[in-house]
Image 1 (cartoon, helix red, strand yellow):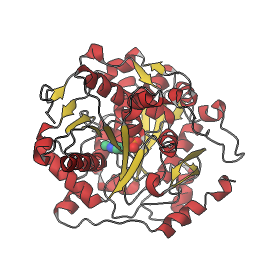
Image 2: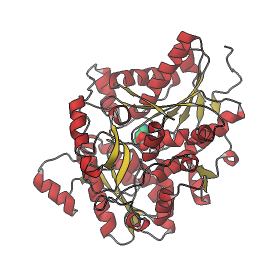
Image 3: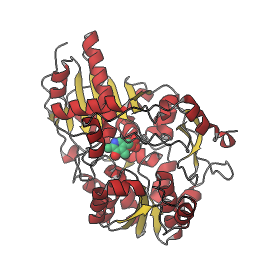
Length: 459
Ligand SMILES: *Cc1c(COP(=O)(O)O)cnc(C)c1O
């Protein structure tokens, strides 16, 4: 029960100690996840199918299930050095406020202008596109973190970028749009009249505020019909998790320096990329039988893909244009209630995270947004950082685990991922501060209805 007080508030790594490779957890998974399928044939997608949409290096990484380590090219490592290594913080002040015997650590990824971990994959995707002689990328963004991250990376590597931003978000978050434009991106509210599918949607639903699915369809349409242009995605896919493994590798190097082995590792889960990246190197040890850890995925009760979804083949988008992925899903038609303010709105979950959860290596829990914002408030007041609502799901679970340790007199080490800052989420914070935030939990019928539509693809 003695506290390990030799540990500094921040455990720094030098640039030389930063990881030189990404860690590919699939190499250590005894059973791999099922392959992506072409929805027209229900046959596994080919490299050629994917290369129409994504650049080749990224496709190769997407399909690579065997190489444990993949070297991070020097130019990407140099880009990382502008904002990495990210701080690994011992949450002494939070521990004190909770009066817990637990040690709490968090890996803070909000220390760059995009405000989240998404820059780790944006840098890689822009670098490879440039290497392959492409001149532009397209993408979609909802809340705006991914669009901002890719804008920064494209500015750095010298690529044009078009971001289709869900129309309601671009109206609600005009400042996000200006950040992207400052980095040189062209931001188009979606649906737009610049694409065929945008025009079709506008005709069918005049005045619509748009959706992520619709923005994806527009971005992919432009990517496949423009010379030297490809599309970039900010979560869910295996190559994104691979790039995000830098979070886990840095955390592990830092904790190993002080002989700290976390008992519990916690991440919020939207599409699964920060969680997958944070846990990967630790999961590798567990899969190889070297050390045991508890991993906890935390999702919103209003969008509970792991805890209440089904493990089925589903589309990656609401527009049903992507390949089918085997994952825990609420059905691609599922849209979380409008009063849900906390991000993590994706209907599905990374195939890697889904498989590890299905096979019992990861636990999952869902939390209600009012309790998430209470955790955010406590964290802001003790540790000083204003957390993103998404990240605050992990804070909630870390606090709950630390309180359990207090009850049981257990001195566990808890590590969680603090994925970003919440400066652009003030509308949600305002609702919470005004006492106007409510919780909405979908009914079983709602979930069953959207999942039932997947049956034709799951014969
Ligand atoms: C995008 C985002 C998430 C969720 O995405 P994952 O792919 O599940 O990691 C979490 N936190 C922040 C701050 C984000 O921007």
